[in-house]
Amino acid sequence: MVVFPNAKINIGLDIVSRRSDGYHNIETIFVPIPWRDVLEIVPAHGEQTTLSVTGREVNCPMEKNLVVKAFRAMQQRYNLPEVDIYLHKIIPDGAGLGGGSADAAFAIMALNDIFEIKASKEDLAEVAATIGADCPFFIYNTPMLATGIGTDFTQIDLDLTGYKILVVKPQVSVPTAQAYAGVTPQLPTTPLQELIKMPMSQWLGVVKNDFEKSIFPLHPVVSEIKQEMLNMGAIYASMSGSGSAVYGIFKGDNLAEENPSKFEQCDIFIGDL
Image 1 (tube, rainbow, N blue to C red):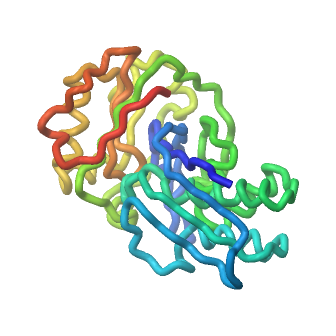
Image 2 (cartoon, rainbow, N blue to C red; image 1 turned 120 degrees about the vertical axis):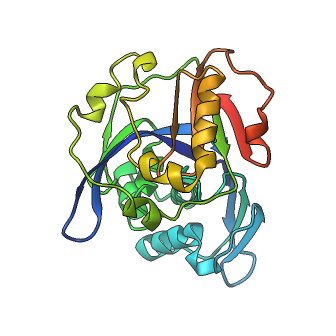
């Protein structure tokens, strides 16, 4: 079975408070975007599970790959036989786009179909939650408000049909620990789910990503990319998650195919929302 795991963006990201367990409570909105990897899972030809990765280089041992972790979690829960996994990586890592989590979640859903487990989405999301905080989002793969440590999801009414998105990932990565080290948690004056009810033309400067304040001085290229998107006519632009990818949302065809010089040597995606 072949599936196509897609990336996500964060619209708004408020670091609300620091928890006693060392994690942070956040409020953010996850939105799926059509930048996709390719994942194939078939019954194993040999006696052991295998993983073959093409496309972007993935520097981690096989058993630490999130797709393999997802398979092992499903195998343990549903007594599955071994499989061969083929993963073609297109979504950049270290970008705040959730590519690895998407791969894991789509693997869980594919295994559910291949072996006719007939588990509910709720059951699959429970398995996904053992792999990573944002993995369950990709089981539902529809705009969601994420709260708590990013694992509590509530479906929201957000229709971005008719908009185009430009995503640019520079050649810098932002470790999550570094991103959190530079933020000061603060309860927002107005909840994010209320702010996004405003027209998108009013989001800029109001619907914010708290990580930008500390990441932009460390990696000026990220800030420059955001500004360039606004110069190009983006209605709204923001860093996604803890970065370093930046996205701009454009109305209709108001997005030139030519990319500014600031985007050279960057990974670029243009698509419909």
